[in-house]
Figure 1 (cartoon, rainbow, N blue to C red):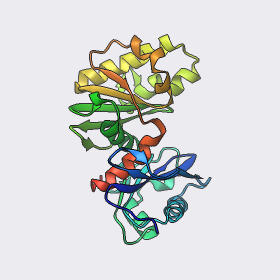
Figure 2 (cartoon, helix red, strand yellow):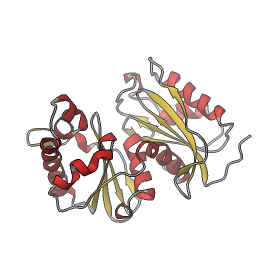
Figure 3 (spheres, rainbow, N blue to C red):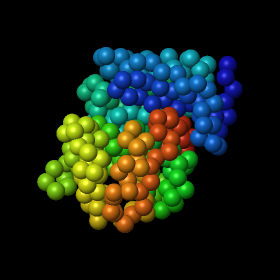
Length: 254
C-alpha cells in the first residue's frame, strides 16, 4: 500500500472528457506519481463518475484524504450547477456521494476553477501570492476564483457578469475567438473590456489567467490596458489536481 503523509495527497480533477488523478507533493506542487486518467463516462451521472473516482483511488493503492474538483458550483457540499457533466448532478450532496464510494477518509469537493486558482496562487507567479487575486480561465467559458491572501472565496462565476450588454464569457472566452475567427488583436480588445469591468468592480491586486490560450500570452497580454498586473498561469493542466489536493489538506468544504 502506498505510504502517504500530510504533504503527499491525492487530487482528482473531474472534467467533461476525462477524470484525472495524481498524488501531489504539497511542498512543491509537483506530482509524485504519473497522472492516471480515465475517460468520463458518456452517461456522466453522479454514481457513474464516483465509481471512476474510486477506481482511480484504488489504482494508486491509496488510503489518505482525497481532494476532488467538479465543473460545478459547490455550496455547502451540494452541487448547484453542472457544466459538461450530467444535469442530474444538480442538487447532489457530493460529500455523501463520494464518502459512500470512498468510506473512512476525509474528502473535499470544490469547483474546478477554484481549485486551479488555489494551485496557481501557491505555486505560480510571485505576483499572485499576496493580496486580492482574481484567477480566470479563458476556455469554453470564463471560470473564476477569488483568493485574498491565500483564502478562497468560492463559487464566484464572474464569467456570467454582463459587460457591455452581454455575458463576459460570450465575448471574451477563447471559444469566442475561435467561433468568430477573431485575430488576437480583436479578441484582446474584448478581454481588455471585460478586465476593465472586473477592475472597476473588484480592484484586485493581480489577474492570473489560465486556459490553453495562456500558452500564447505573448500574442495578446501586451495589448491589454488595465492598470492591474496581468500574468499567465504557470501550472496549466496540473492546476486542478494540485488545487484539489491542497483543498483537502486545508480542510476546505465549500
